Image (tube, rainbow, N blue to C red; front, side, top):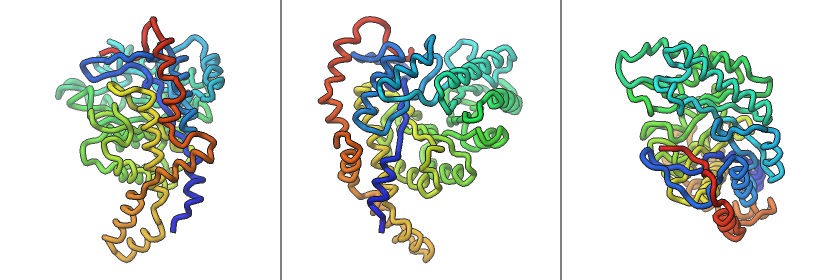
Length: 386
């Protein structure tokens, strides 16, 4: 039998990092949709993130994206975050929005462009030093569109060279997290298209290099939990980007498309010893037509529910069924946990943490949504262009 008290204790230790860009304007490949009350700068993004932490109790850090969140004084930004009860978290680089990066960034055939890209990544490490951030997350849009456009092996050599320079710059307590993506924007070759490529580079770099699993960056039908189990077995799983794969990417709430998959992933995390601070749980998503702060809250709640169900799996019963080859019973043990309504359990956890049992209702009562619409008038809203 599962120890419910132990499950509750584990849930109280869980944290989920929210991304600053989730609070800004976003959209499809064709149009960015503006909303009222959207933050106009990183300071206001942190204000919104603090509201999420206030009602969930499990989102104490906020990921930054450079240059989207670039400021003159990062110590002041860190103090602003601390004053609101949160901290600055992972620093995300951007090597995909400059004209120079049309043919790639650190894999670009021209040395000058590669130098520019690596320089940006080193700047991100400088920002980590100023913010106290542990993790540098790298995602590259590098690739090619046509056969013969560039040397496939040569691009891997350039990638390895650039990563090695950034890795050498890391402090003792800092990490490099390498993200992969099946395709887009390159449609013939992508330079970091899968977990194997990311793993190979991280393995060569050393112990401070880890792989990021973005749940939206896989082909339909991919068994992500197998990837998770393998990376944990090799000690190379550093972080998750949670989201849902409706856009062939990461633009909707975590757990919205396939909550059963999220449960299966979290079970492998727990079974593989990954339910520790060494594996960062992060959201990487945008909210285009839905209200942003409630969508982030719902995403956090979805991750919590999947985690609670995974913690409830009767592992002794599962192991016994597996050892005797009882296929149906083994599956039933998993399904029993998945089909458990864990919302009452999570309400108890929240009450014991001293927060409202219903985070969405608490946010609605706070009046924050009305406040930001009334006060954030004028100026340029944060977001990305399309």
